[in-house]
Length: 510
Image (cartoon, rainbow, N blue to C red):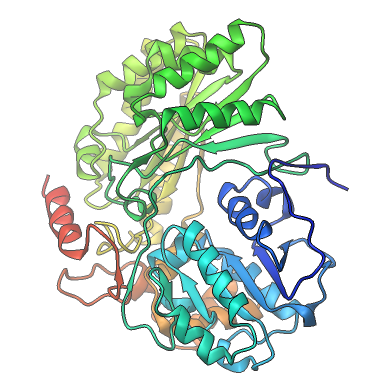
């Protein structure tokens, strides 16, 4: 049995008149390290009259009986999460399509990055979907479902469709993504020893990224970049340290926080005063490899840091809007070494729009230069292959064909191995189907259901496409003209399609 510490006052509830499951499409250990999932759970757990239970892909039995459930909320973060979602629905004997469920079945809804960027492949699955930042919309939608629980589903959905950030496929024609002001610091409300990051207190320092890399959904979906107030961050760190010595700072561009150095200084002073603190951060921007920041991270137990360089050549880095010079990379390594780090992990991407073999070779050349300049310093690479994401400037560009990507992958593995550099590359085959779902439309609903029924392995994706005569290349590898209407155009996300077109043209013309 896992040991859980709740960092909020849970009301003693005796009378429930509304029961909910909150499903996470992964194992409990991942759910208990998911800040968004836990924070949304907390918001509903403190409401009167609602009993909410966390359920996961590895849940064997539930506390609340299936027939007592009024609503099911689902987290949908990764394209392949549909497999776990369908399995959960089937396990509980719910029809996969909303129209096939009856009036007595619970209202089933979802939110998360997949849904917010392109809900179309799943519009027949859910009664409604939350588009954008979920904290407030999720809470208000749940309250509304609770309030109207004795009304017919159609009436509840009609009222939900009037809310900003709610997409009801049977009613809504246009939906505006909901963007929340960061007035509070979001943190891990339940510290658990069963979490993947065991007994770790995670807090959000900022949301969004001003770098706006052309391929990056995390950046575009979370614009504008927003920062949590410094005093609130310090207050939240203090709360976490009362319960654990492990803290993690979260954000797509955390070091852009105007007071990030002050946050580090605060932590460092506590460590210098004898407090044991184990602090980690997600990857750093190259310009944040400064002694004040790296020193703190080393004192707080970080052995390696990650740096997303994305591409080997400066030309291609400009194309993706990653304006990063080789001198800046060297400077980051200088600082890392001076602060006692033994190595850096680089993240990169292959198959980016306009990429040539020369760009790939430049990754190897850069690695050679680093190896010669910094003898004994450990570098390794993690690569993924380019996946076009809806609502980004690169949404119009299809993927390179699989053979070409495999050739590039093999070349990099061979050449970097010669230099004694460890390298991992994501599966081009799986990334292909991720692209298919990412740029999918409502023609894919029956396809994903059938893929699930046939086991969800790579072979099933291929076989079902053949059986259903679906041209998967249309979604995954074709380039789209800028004037083409896109399935997700009805989702209004700032800065908007016209801006994305201009930005796309500007980037690839470099």
